[in-house]
Length: 350
Ligand code: NAD
Ligand code: TYD
Image 1: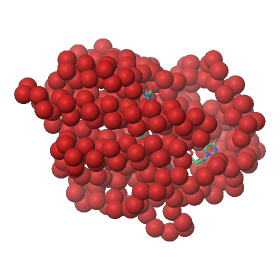
Image 2: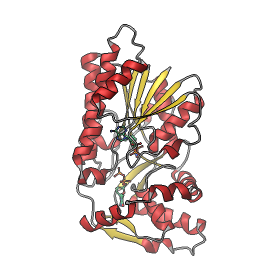
Image 3: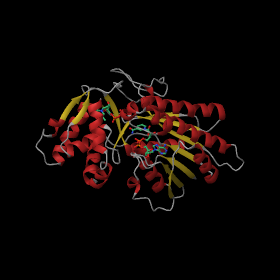
């Protein structure tokens, strides 16, 4: 089996690539990544010399490049994770999200479709990795199921919804063998420090303010990234073609409670007096169009494929903090250059 994994140098992709390379030594894993600010080959340094792993630098927006790659490599499957992934960046620059998330996905679908019609084609599956944010926002109750109507609010979620619709259109129209999963918020090692949890780990470590949007009452359903990678493995191998699965951690937390727990864990780990880090919490202007609450009903995945998350949020968060404190070089590397300038500008312009 030769599998093209896109976005494998990013946060979730790096965990998926590592899992597949180590667990399936007979598979050939090609990691295609443009290496944007969010892509980092250091995420994969432990497997870069494995004989079943190949890195390819490239842009999924370049249709000719993608077509030639499929022609040359005769892939059996694609696991597609490459994307622009940060909501705040999508509010500042939506076009980039349309290019990578919509056009890039359609380029991959098109190349797979063209390839499928060739006599020598060995193509079996196009697995599209998506987000629960396509469903929009919940009130105080209820959960997203696979039947919830799409209602995206941010340019990020709109671009992911667009890509999901194209994946289903290629299944309905061209019989491209597709599978989709929609997952809740991930956290864990290799997460670029612009998303809430790694940003606040970086800021606590450096005694910087912790910017909480609005009143901090928005709720997210957190999943440890290795559990997401395991769910992708299970779905990739066992889901019927045309199926969609929701993936979630059964871990609903208000943002303010996430940050208070993080402050407490890091008071202990950094030897600071209890309550020290909480003083860094700063309420800032709310995000435009901020979705109030996400919660995933993952019972279909549990019933059909026996997947369940393996760690609680408290366990996962402690593992995550330990990883960031142990991997100072990683954090220093990704926050060098214009990192701080970008955030200063973002908060003064919001
Ligand atoms: P990330 O931003 O950490 O990584 C994205 C990767 O894609 C990077 O390595 C980047 O270099 C690469 N990339 C970006 N544009 C590219 C292009 N044009 N061509 C080739 N490579 C390109 O993102 P992530 O958090 O790891 O998310 C991965 C996928 O999972 C995305 O599709 C995202 O929508 C989805 N997802 C993320 C979450 C989450 O909580 N992070 C939750 C559910 C679903
Ligand atoms: P984020 O990590 O950006 O993920 P998403 O927007 O995809 O859910 O944000 C998680 C939650 O934290 C979301 O409700 C926005 C909020 N948030 C803050 O309060 N402050 C921050 O600095 C960031 C980045 C996010």
